[in-house]
Length: 170
Length: 220
Image (cartoon, rainbow over the protein chains, first blue to last red):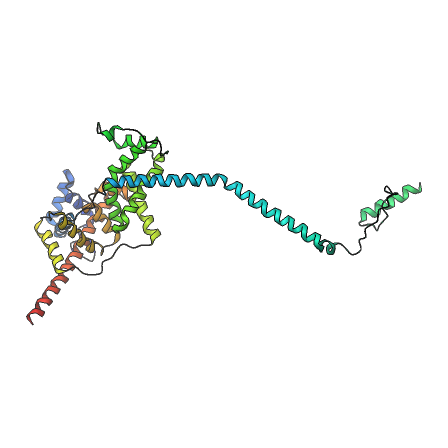
């Protein structure tokens, strides 16, 4: 059954590949017999074959692309060498890349740390110190005196103080 | 592959015997740059034809063809020779063409203008007489006219017809290059033939009408 393609000369779907083989001169044996029997009885396929043969005549009259000539291979090899050189330069850069990256990280970290220290020294540190904190002057004659008792900071310290006091009594 | 490992005089250069592609590939894989250069020389024409058939932009063909061989050179160590070198190379060429068209976002050239009466009558002579033009200049001009007509077809139809009928690739080769079933290539080719002839007849008719109109004007 011929296809409805919207343009004329449509062959039967089943025979399209055989028609192409016939055009290329590659149809022989059983395929050739079956195809020729069909074409004798199918006007659509006969028309399609004539149409296809005309297309072949038309297209084969065109000039194919020309050989680019002997210079082309030289240009290709020059491009390959250039790409390789570029690649080698890239590999050298890639080898040092982690070290360069590490160096930059170190520089940034060091700058940040120095900045922090300078700003602390310039007064920020004083402002951050709690108001109630006092610096105890060190008496040069009593270096090993016990720390003055302060208010216990936690439940554990309270219990420790109670335990110390009880031990002192006995 | 080291670029320096090439200063060899190989038999294929002196013409003593022709080394086949398989041996040249093996030599290339071992770093013999001259062997690869010989492969380029052997296949440059077909790669050019293939790229020209797909791109349909003559200005870019050489650049893309060079890129194809560069890719082949960079990948040749991974080529296991299970397929023919030419098939492998043509597949690289097809992929490179698609990449190029995608990256550049270019569409194939489309000729809007109709063919002149002279051009149509030239084609008519070819179709009816079965005598192709003999001179290169006439064939080149025919190619230009046909390119105009082919640009009216769907891209795949155009490529198949150009590669098969103009550039001389076989159905088998086209199936391998384009990753299609052989039967599918045959059917698509046959249908494309119908479409190009339909386009041709439309141009023929419009040229005939133009001719009749200009004759009528001359009478007046």
